[in-house]
Image 1 (spheres, rainbow, N blue to C red):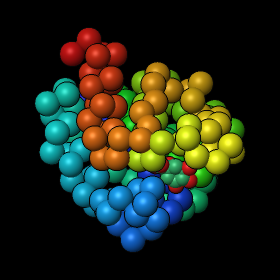
Image 2 (image 1 turned 90 degrees about the vertical axis):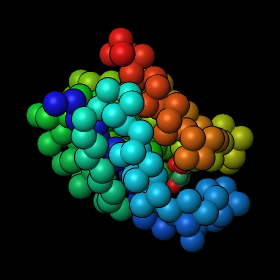
Image 3 (image 1 turned 60 degrees about the horizontal axis):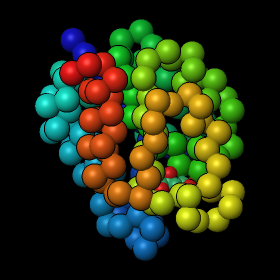
Image 4 (image 1 turned 180 degrees about the vertical axis):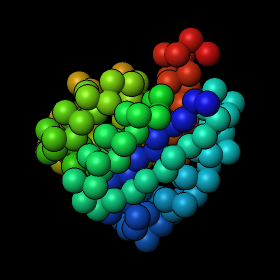
Length: 146
Ligand code: DQA
């Protein structure tokens, strides 16, 4: 049983209503539904989706996933740019992780261009909206030789 952790951080529960110029009108439920629908084509039997506005809850979820998930796709919102604790949790997770951002963070405010979790990830996809999650799944499949 290959399980994928799909993790979303602060404010991403507001997708669909929040800043549509940057994030479009897709909702978090749309993203989770989409990833669940296409994950099996990339070798995953199950997707565990989790969102929290709290750093500690996200760390707890990553620690839990270390027991039974084989890879992760993470969009940690603004914690991407600040949280060394999430970086460390992802390193400790020890499975391949791809970072996704709906918006093109490398062309936004200077502070948003830095991802402190990047070194814990095998790749990053930005600025492709919901299609970024397909790209992340492809990269994870490639990494596991599928
Ligand atoms: C985001 C980019 C972050 O800078 C921002 O704080 C978010 C969303 C994105 O998906 O583009 O909450 O991760």
